[in-house]
Length: 240
Image 1 (cartoon, rainbow, N blue to C red):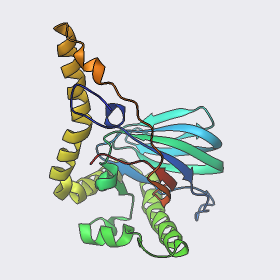
Image 2 (cartoon, rainbow, N blue to C red):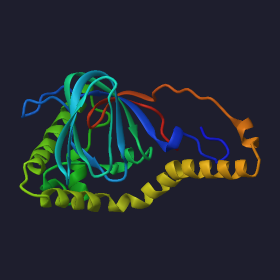
Image 3 (cartoon, helix red, strand yellow):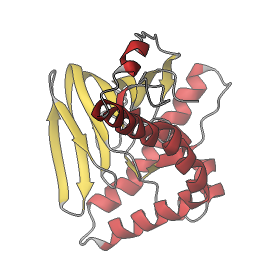
Image 4 (cartoon, rainbow, N blue to C red):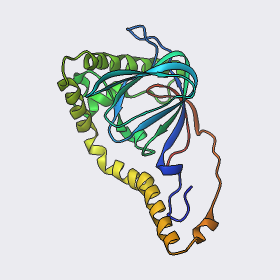
């Protein structure tokens, strides 16, 4: 919590979760998660156990970054990324703009025919909420494999146009949600930055009174083992 500016939440308006990366083998023999892109959120990995890698695709090309305990890796919006699990890879994930990834900021690299409209995309990516765990796992794996089909086409493309076309399709899919995203950003990351500005203003005037409002908080995950894009997630409460 930040006092003196009306913002409550983790520092900087970030989100945190614990991730156990999927160990399901894909058609290429690689075990791991679902490739996707974020449109407004940078993402950081703090590797806490196991080993693996993150495959990334940007206009600069394709790269593979090894992940071992102690590694901190991060990337900016627009980076297509796929987590690879070589041996029990476990990560603490930090996401910019808490709440936006859950509100649809992430777009999976589905083949172009699934990106033409929001209804088609939603039907291909939705997971059954109240179904038995085995059924949810099958749906998550099928979604992962479909995204890998589009990802491989992007990675193997001769030039940058296919990636640019995917970026355009992703932007078109999320456009109807932008007003909601902006409000989440205002309540989160913008409010956190504004709180710091207010504190600096008060300190400049010699007013340290807000320091008396300091608090300490500790939380446990609000949900364990959620089927995410990259693996099973333990998630913490986000902003209201």
